[in-house]
Image (cartoon, rainbow, N blue to C red):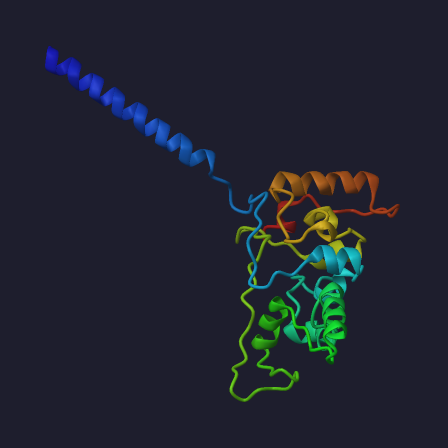
Length: 218
């Protein structure tokens, strides 16, 4: 009898312990795509606050695939060079170098941001922004922030063409130093948005977003 009670107590303790462990594990578990708050460190500290906010560069300039492809796309390094062939550091850093050079009675030296050095290295460029045969071209391993499960298919084209602002899904990107996932991107969130836009429209324009399963699962 004693051994039977002891075994029961031991089993109960094991069950309680297992429940606690599983509870902790499942508390941090998220469904596929539901990575709300995900904010990975990127290989280059690209500031959306500076580019999209302060400089007001349109999202479509860098993510040019958004209106003609399912995927918005990550801009090629060569696109960055449209500006950063000339802009090699922040205005503050460049001004500081001019002031220091003036005080020292010497010509100003080129100032290159450590983050932009990574860009130039990926393109195999030397200090004069020319291709360096000794350097290999290598892609920048950007980390994707907004990930959907394989069984769902999101197409940027109809959303952009309907006039849906990028911030509707991606949050106030123009205020972010590092991009994070703001919404949970769950099926319910998408369906509710389709229902609401079907009633209220988009920017005063009537739209008919589908709530059919095949619209996103095909």
